[in-house]
Image 1 (tube, rainbow, N blue to C red):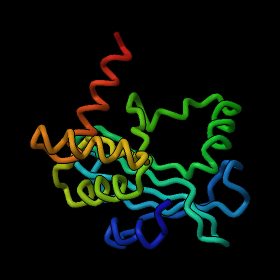
Image 2: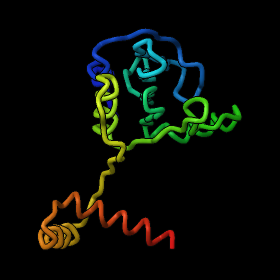
Image 3: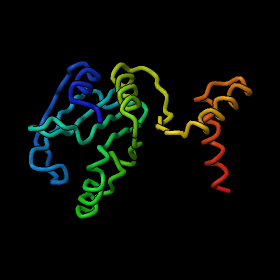
Length: 170
């Protein structure tokens, strides 16, 4: 999970608000820090929820107002507690605001890259990064297949995942 330092660097140390986190799912010492550039039409807002005693980050979110996209990175150890509390509160945990749903990210680098680009007002990839742990034999076979197709291993794995997703639908 990202650190407070990662978040601060990504939002260029621009903090606009902070408060106690009002839900119980992350414990009694949860607090939020927010960064907003003041522009609801083409700007951004970004937040983290962290523990004031341990400095552990529970959640990080970024909202891209220009493109109406919201990204979220939830600490995996606390995700179920968050979902359970959302259910008790009768809140859809997938909705960021209005009709905009969160795109949940699993890779810290993905969240940081997207947030950095959003803060800078730059274009960014909307593809979601995933981490894959392949057995050495499968990895070697994938590298050979990618080489035969004259593409990178990442491109090969992306094609394979897209094909697998398409195949499951049919």
